[in-house]
Picture (cartoon, rainbow, N blue to C red):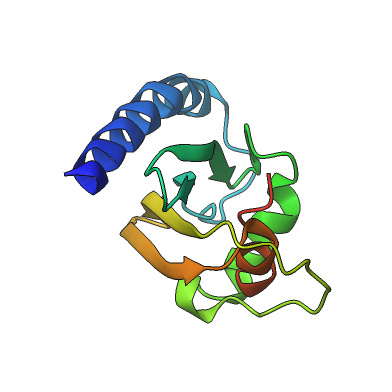
Length: 139
């Protein structure tokens, strides 16, 4: 039930946030005859598994990079390299504490006109989750 409420909240936020961007993009004149990259809109959620409460939520928009994510250009680049598949993100090297504060990551929205519904495994802490997902969820 909790996943359903997270999905509903994420979907509502995605619709609300993408509407103004769509209207602006439709009004802008075309600068080339080349087909532009399809826009991608994602809600990223980090959830504490003990309480079930969301730790953080970010909105990531690609083509052009933006949203509430602090490093949208880098996050979109990592997703582009993985073909939009969160399971194929490169695991980054780094050191984390041995803190046990388990988290699960979620992503909902669309990547280049394809629906995205990603639910990660449970990671021992936020640092481990960030490294495992190429820092896309680092916000």
